Length: 163
Image 1: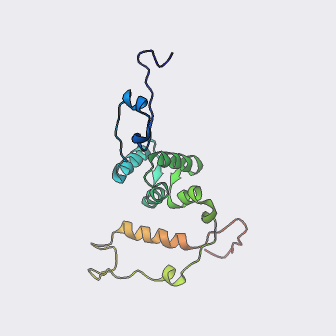
Image 2: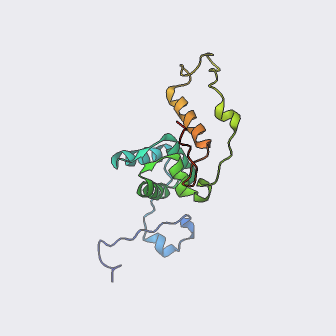
Image 3: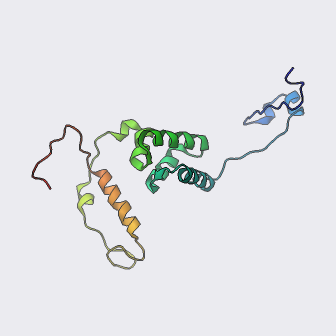
């Protein structure tokens, strides 16, 4: 009865329309679709963050895209889960949602890399920030180094004389 009434439409999606039976193909419109380019998906995700006032970091966006791949629905679901749990899209929060068993493992620290001073720029030999290494790049390096340090848990002992 619903099929015979005017104005009733159904939407079917399939990966291989050649496998559909001829009766369905005869009464159907073929709407070819393709995946959005990653640049467009990034634009949509950033637009959603701005519209919904979700704070984010570049590392968090990159980690989310690495996890979700080219699936816009998965991007929306992951972003919603991160925001409802942590209210901020950062690298650490993405890892907590997408790979919780790795998020709380003790991390190995490369002591030499963690304490080494800033190296001179390879292009202009100045100490950063310079024309080639921005303050933002330095901040990202600091965040990576800080992420490599162990996290203090509730059972950690705090020294009263430590400033």
